[in-house]
Length: 295
Image (tube, rainbow, N blue to C red):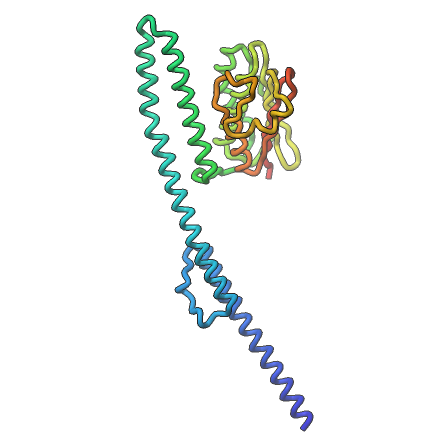
């Protein structure tokens, strides 16, 4: 009799353990299906019978349904922002082009030179501001995604330098690009945009007779692109702020530009797993270094 009771107890225990195991497995399989469907963006609570679910499954179902709705709302907002940015970019091109055209026509008449030069300068400044804001907004909102690919840095650097060479030559500033065989994983188009901004900044704040130098250092994990100038330099207390949007140093408030170029450089660097930093001392020039991952 005792043996029978023990046997029954063992069988009952095994049965309960087996039932719990099956129930746990069913719950995990159900949760796994929910997550798979949610990852595809098609999750709805109607797909599951709550009466057959555990409390945990039910909570997960509610959470995933809310997350799916939230993701769709975020995407809808991104689509609206993308359309808005596109409209702003499109709608402002024609008026600015017309203003520049009329300015050119009026400049052909004597007596209007000073006012027209000021008008043209402000119009170009507005044009640069709008272009920079559109680029920055697209990056920040994820409307434009960076697509880093492995490649050599030299062709991209040569292209960026060639764009700034005429402006630098007109100011009497040579841009020296040292040959390099370094590589990195980067988006060629947007990285060239970042280097262009660094070069433009260097030329802008370097006096005639100075020089701008571009060098590359290859480390184990990163390749660093250094843009060095012999300009006025940046005070130590200002250096943490130069990458902020619209920041202009107190000593350079009258210089051309809108204070968004370095902010855009930082966005481009961070968007592809890199970073940017500055090393400078007043009176000795500055070096801006853009670090890009090699793997």
